[in-house]
Length: 149
Length: 485
Image 1 (cartoon, chains in turn blue, orange):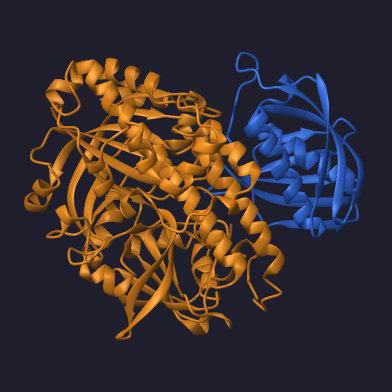
Image 2: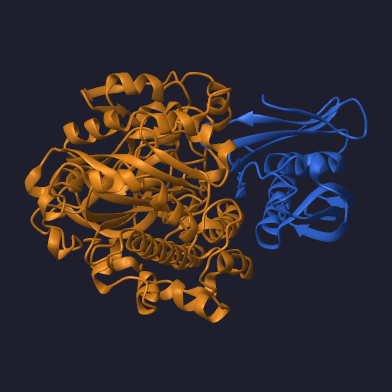
């Protein structure tokens, strides 16, 4: 474990970063499934840059769909990776408006990447299905995702 | 992670078998090429389990192979080779990897170490300016949507036609720098959008451009055919792939295959092994899209090689021709190819997945370039930035045993985080500088992740494939200047 990040909502940790020989992994937590998806996205951007350096300058509405909840999580992260790679947008706040087993709608807040302001830490290129786990426990939800960097 | 406790049968000093009986569902045995010492570290993670998992895939023939640089990947191990019968086998995007046609290109020069060392800073700065690198780097060639479609189909030739290199370069590039069957209609709009701005860029992570000096020649006859004539000769090694484009192609098609695995009645031990029959529409679509990404990567290396020649030319005040800057070879190490192989005495068309593995065809093979017909296809094996790289050639034994495949590099042993922690407080750039290696990196903080400690010693890797007979080593070179993304 490299890094703990406490979510804005309370004392519970939002996610942690895992070591993986070839790549890097995240474990995200959430009291509910919406929070889990939001924290997984936060974890993703914490690998790309320092989350504190990102301001909420604009927002973007996103819609993602998939076959099941596990692949929805992967699609969600891949959507954000795509937006960073092509449009160079960094996000730091996610408002999940609706979430079912095969679709989600979210409003994402962030700003354009600025090399003078944002330190790039890693180039995350894809969220993978490898060792993907999404579980419900007594405390809520937990998901593990390995990212290709 | 827990140590792997499975069954391994020693065949000889460099071959270790995982029998089919190890796990119900394995269709063929696994075969790991490694020395006893290397095997120890390979078993520290669950990597051999991944070798066994690949053996589950329908249509796999021979063995599920692991090269000595094997390390834990997602689904397939990195350093894995698996061939599937085209008739009833599957193709798996995970067996190629995200960075489709990640590979290496080697250029030679007629310059000597004595001529380059005094000007290495100037040279590295010129290369750093001229070759776009780093996270989020964008290319200096502006590619329109229409041109993007052309380059996906034409491969390296697309760049040569625009004056970036010569016909001669194509002769010494795997597949002539163009994999046939590329169909841009199988490429998503997203992949195109990710690919367009990144064309002609080195990228980040483990990708690099290295100015090297020849330090050892093991076989002077073969080396001389490659134009490597003496110790101290300067070479340039370029390591990059298909950037965000290849990643998006892999992501898109993994998703498609994810959805159809069960429809085809395929049972997998790991979701990341998602696959579809080679003959199915999903399989054919992936092959056509993968070829587009492979061709994109060859354009990338073609452009970078051209800018490398330009940079040398500028610094040394001579034309690239006068500097003897010919290409030795270009190999892919993340790719799937339809090839003909002889298995148990019969000829078979197979789809060879090489993920972190290099093609190693022998002298006699039809696809070995004319100029290497007497010695075998060159195999380029980069090490980490602090150690050395090797040049080898393919052999008949590789053809007979491993579908003409060998290792691709050093192979990671430490995760990026562990590497950073082990180097904490140390100045990697300064340490390299003290050892005569000038480095320029877009992201200095990520240098520690690529330090020597994070990798296996490539010398041990090459010794295994050389002794096992699946490659013959020719020469070794060490870095004098490195550009990292």
